[in-house]
Length: 614
Ligand code: F6R
Image (cartoon, rainbow, N blue to C red; front, side):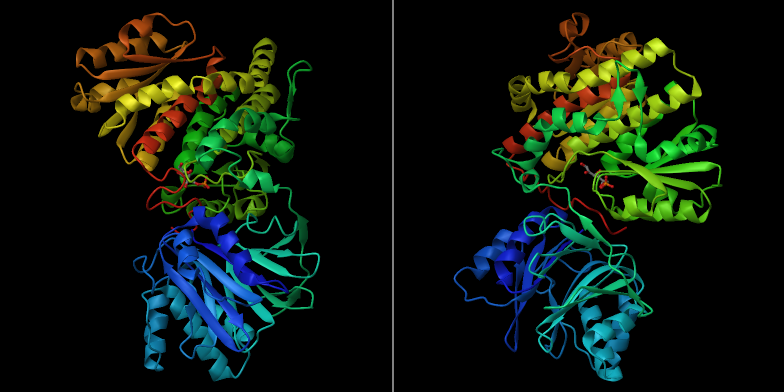
């Protein structure tokens, strides 16, 4: 939530920061702003709306400075207007600060500062923070970097902060707790700071991820210095970024979401590459290998996640329980963390998160850790907070996902969970060798089959045109296709703003059936498998009420074709792997409907890619 970019070096800061903000805009797009130190001046440019508004607002202006901070906002405190946009400047005009996170005790701090004579212009917690730093700096007669460190003792909440001062034009200070911050060091010693590596990668691949309660002090011409909150100096841990610049661009597609949908043959392949061999009959998730016996012997595996990642967890539950016969529970991280869950060292908690930064998932993990459970992660973003606090984990290797609606990350998460289920089942001896090998071979064939599903795009676009004006939609599935129905409904509602619900097909008659009439599209996963006949009966129930049925079926299906209004065929595969194929028509359908409704596909309203607040 909110994107931070800053630059201190010998180049002009403004274009670097503006470009960086565009790359980070998926984190929030309510308002944007940049502050620059130019000689003895601190100049701030900010406005409501997207980064493009800021670009238009600054066009033709003579903007200079080698020391600058920028921000794209997802509003928490106060509406998204010009005044609440970051950066915020302290009352005496010397300091500017950007912030991602939430200062929970901002109201108490603000009242105290008002008593000291401070006057506030905005509704934000960030303006409280910048004035607190100024106040401490004056009261203790210390430079603003030291004042920031002291201020953090008074702050309750989450933050990634970058501050700059016109009194120290060659310096910059940053700090973090629970919100991410990466510092890149250019070959020429320039500093690039950002919420994630995407704005940095085109300048340098050498980065340091700031840890919780660390403060970075950047001075032009000097080496990066990092301190803990107790002011003890720490040795920076440098890492090499692996992401390539092309992965952050649209590559000829109209939207990132469409590009990411089409990347799935590759991203699924990258996810299992080197982790299985059907011919030799092995599967291995290196990252969690040492924890597999613990997982097999655990009381239960608890998968925690939010949104789409939670849906992937539900698929995982079906697979791990069925194949490896291990008790699995799937929990919303936000509920789990506040439920006082019963946990012990015999539980294994696995967080699933594309960003690796989701605040609720992080907090749930921290709780599980404090109760002695083993904590593992399935993350996409390398070096993310979750990947760093977990005991071990497996990356999904889907590459950067920029579209706010998750697509390729979901199929990669499901792929890791399939590998996990297979590996555990193999070691536990709960899967016959022939089935094991067959599943591995089928998984290896999935990328080609995904390509075949993508080739049905034109047909899906036609179906989209027919239902683009629907006001409600129902998605039905059974078994491991039930989470696919949930995910299909989420994709439709989040990017096209059509109300949609996902249900286990058999549950339809316990309530949702009342909604069905001739205007209601019902998307059903009716592929061959154990519950095929039952789903066929559910389709008949829908047709009896004149609902419109759009069914995803296995290639060559005849029975459903005769009943449904439309069918979308997917290639035959092992039933366990159907979620990897069946989800793709739903992604494309939502995409086309959203485009036809003129919705902002990559940046749906009110959403942000990385939810680092509760
Ligand atoms: C939906 C979507 C969200 C995320 C959720 C969790 O398309 O993207 O529902 O899945 O916010 O995010 P991560 O996986 O980053 O923890």
